Image 1 (cartoon, rainbow, N blue to C red):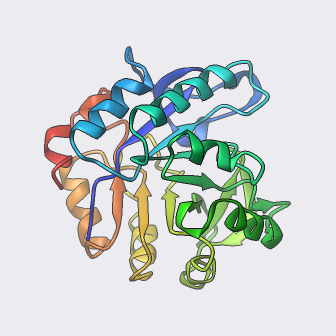
Image 2: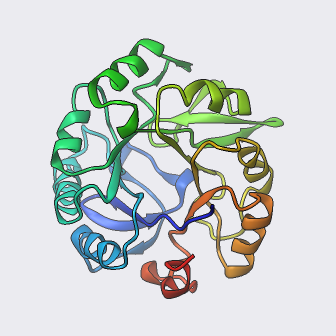
Image 3: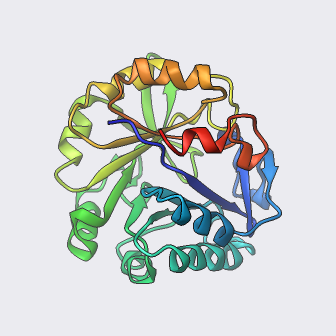
Length: 256
């Protein structure tokens, strides 16, 4: 059943909404739609008050960034404010995953550690499952269009892998994780409509929990998403939500 999953994206030590395809590690650059005057804890408390679970905190800076420690500090504080209510992603590996679970995350969200040199590193995936358990692991299969296919991208959406997003891929990986997060990166942060072909593909993974993010810019877009996803997919709204400078009322979607 379709549910709203909230988000807290942190970039350069601030809660922000960015255009997904614009993110670059060099110079910590990104095209920014919104920078909040509030910190991550403000949003964590709000989501807890409203009983919203399964939201994701994403640390958008590389570990080598001068902003990473501040970004991480805010993320950890949000987890402590709403223990077991939020998931966290951004630079997660088998070596640090338990730190975030111990800090209060319900799940860790992982892409780049599992997808290396363009391929799935099964030994890394198995190690993650052994470290935190299948029940605490979300795999991020965020993707971009390449030819007629959608291909998983890594390194904060900057690097194409050789892994095509298919129903068979979800079924295979579901043996190792509790659910999936999928950003339609080409439309992420643009609030210009969802990747309907991608949503239709995801809807074929019936019985597998998937949260989709990217391009929902209006309540009409949300209706299109519901139809294309057959009511089976969860969703995130970022830049288009009035909490983050947009026009879609949070008070409406929080009850969906």
